[in-house]
Figure 1: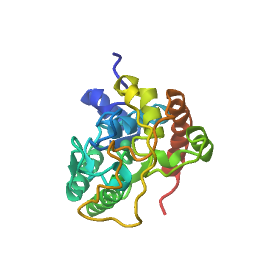
Figure 2 (figure 1 turned 45 degrees about the horizontal axis):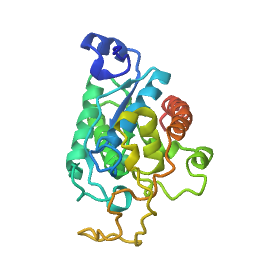
Figure 3 (figure 1 turned 180 degrees about the vertical axis):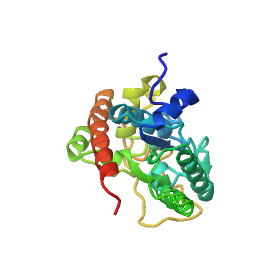
Figure 4 (figure 1 turned 120 degrees about the horizontal axis):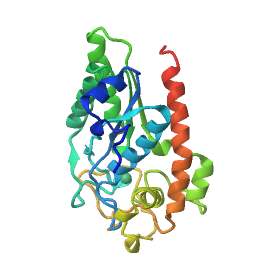
Length: 261
Ligand SMILES: [Zn+2]
């Protein structure tokens, strides 16, 4: 296997020190260890942002940090719920502290442009908090030249790509858990990990407009898949990457170049 030029974990400290001098964009994929139905591995939310971040990093001369593998607790309406076997989640404070700590460590070694590259919807607000607290830490050290961008790669999927993925109508990104998009991209990047014969084709879950704690598990499909994955294909996965990778790269270059108000 060739040594990667973009994965920080594959670099020596000499390589890292040299590359940081060029002020690269550094991607921190943040995932979850979460059930993704009978057909996808527990690592789906780690593998997808890692693979997409690596392709974007190639385009922008960036680096990808080792991912934060664990994420915030799976919720019924977006991940099936935290009760599924193998779903290993963090308390919010731990996730916030972990991401804040890693960001501060990157900055300590000279990184100034950081992307919190989310692969798991439930992480979102805790990444906002981690970014806010890390910037506060840096401000207290007198440093004001750090910029952090937080994104969920699925937010970049355009209407045109949405039509390729869902010719019969788009459910919602929440209900897309382990369904057409994630299954398709996994079929494209890691077909060896997809149990194709087990891809579920059930109806979309129907949730009430409120949340109950402890979870009411009755509306959650027993497979953990929130809408049909039946029409997933490697071709659809390739189409998603072909569109989002250049779009994320362009957006990041613009956003990092723009002056901070
Ligand atoms: Zn997922």
